[in-house]
Every structure is written in C-alpha cells, then in structure tokens.
Length: 107
Image (tube, rainbow, N blue to C red; front, side, top):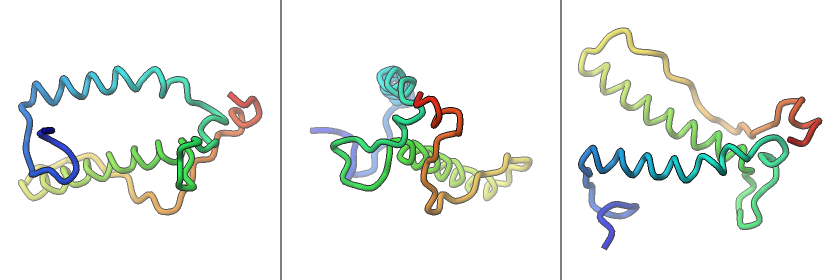
C-alpha cells in the first residue's frame, strides 16, 4: 500500500526521505525538460485530452508552485516574520506563446 498520494490520509515523510524523492524525480525529469523548447512547447502531446500544450502545463506547474510559496509566505506573515519577498500574481487564462526567435527557428 502506498503511504502517500491523492486521497490518502495526511502524512509527513521524514525530511531526508522527502529530499531523496525530490532529487530522484528532478534527476529523472531534467533531461526531458531540457529537451523541450520552441515549437515543442506549443504542440499538444498525443495523449493529452485537454487543450493545454506542454508550455502551458509548465506555466501551470510553475504557478502552482508559486501558489504554495504564497501560502507559506502568508503563514510566515502570521508568525510575525518581516521583510518577506513579493509573491507573483495569478495565472488567469494565459497560454504559453514561444518567443519570436524560437518560433522562427522551430527550436
């Protein structure tokens, strides 16, 4: 039985175990993410049933991460911490659009 995941009871893994998972996932994902650029960010994956492109999904993931950073900043404010960095605003209906140089070269 999996200890963690969607629909599972709240559980907190030991910090060293969480860091090990983080390192393993990012090590596995980085080569693929490093290869995705230009037009590849605007072409939907064949298995994708939504209208989102890989570029938009990367934006969504980034903004999701920022959302949780914002939550942690709110907790820090409630705890009385000062001089906290600014948080980036909402995602809205933005879609990824490649930069002009990437679009022209297809890279």
